[in-house]
Image 1 (cartoon, rainbow, N blue to C red):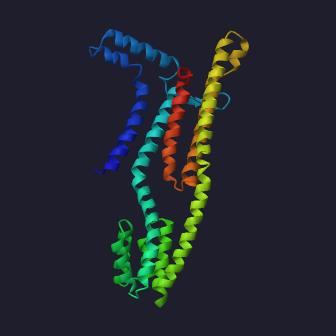
Image 2: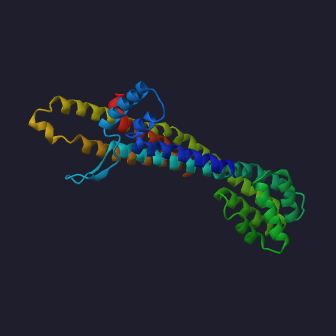
Image 3: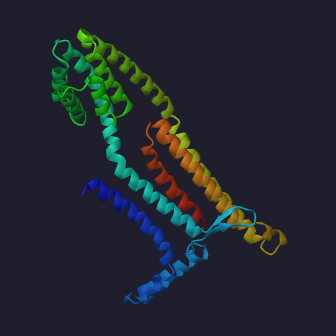
Length: 313
């Protein structure tokens, strides 16, 4: 079995199993009692589990409050966060190979155009030029070139062949193959067309690098915005919980529903984390798949912070 599939599956199952443990926490001491484990250990574990259950961590429930606000238990927050983290990180590890291939192709086309433009000056046929270029390149670009050579040899039009070969390739690779096809149909100007295409392509890359360098400054800002909201929310919840417990005998205390506030802040924090992760992955780092990594990390922090803030702070 593919190593990447095994790794991604194990990562996903690990977090999901931790999430499912929320359901079995209350029965854990009884299970351990029948395993010849010292009574002191079972008693200590039972005391710790009782503290967690008293903080609403052993129940997984969701509903709508009279104020029309979704209300979820801390157990639901933790379970939801762990499942989303597991699915996001396992998907990222599984698709990471495609992302690596995508980035390698982008690097290879930067080397490919100058090489094929130089080879075209030898006045050999398009097929020979592509064969020589393929021998100088590594996979995956080498596979694309040999496939295009095969199609042209069979009588396929160069433009049609380039579209068929590069249909699943990044936009930059499609543009390079289109330039090769146009050069092949330009008669004796094959080398000139490729030189002009190389100049244009290098200018586009310089502009992309400049934009990426500018945007990279905002990567930390976007992530810190999400983390700051999580930290501010749990500190506010802890403060409000302490105030409510301190004035519990007063009539005004019954008007403060901490559970509704916890749920509202948790849902808002989840939305902020998702948006921040998508901005970092798609806009700043240039690929939606990279957002999965940040979604997994921020969701894990959300779940741990909101479900355990009473023990952390």
